[in-house]
View 1 (cartoon, rainbow, N blue to C red):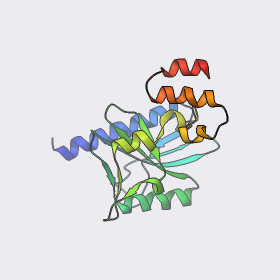
View 2 (view 1 turned 30 degrees about the vertical axis):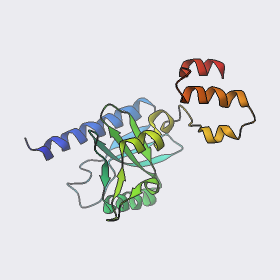
View 3 (view 1 turned 135 degrees about the vertical axis):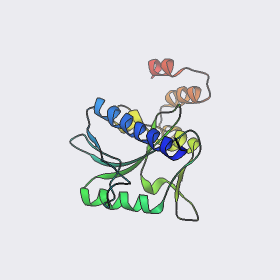
View 4 (view 1 turned 180 degrees about the vertical axis):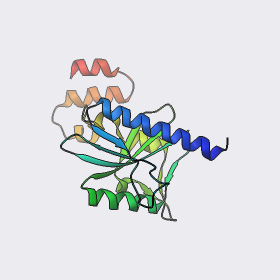
Length: 173
């Protein structure tokens, strides 16, 4: 088996994994048949909606190397999403990590016109799966710094610095 066939199987497995995870969270979801290959129409990998919001998702996975998307892939996703009435999202998954989501405009653009997501960028800046499906909401320390509640900021800083477990912080907050 060639590396390309193996990578395609892994990509297909990851797409099915994303579809199943979204389905478990109550989304109507489908994987586009033969997205990216056996059709002349450019289709996203996954279509998902919860009755209020609809997504056209291009899903990519990697063992740890940066993930690249061609400019054409991103343009096709944006075109489809706009015409379908969906929000375009790039979903990335690195081995031993969860899914992270980005708007295409938030990705790093290379000099060659490709788009890139590094693992550390996904972990630091991506929307994680619980936030994407509406279970949690990300609050940054910068947002909390403007909060007059000093104790809340101190608790969050303690979590950030590793001085307090998240579970304890939730009890305090």
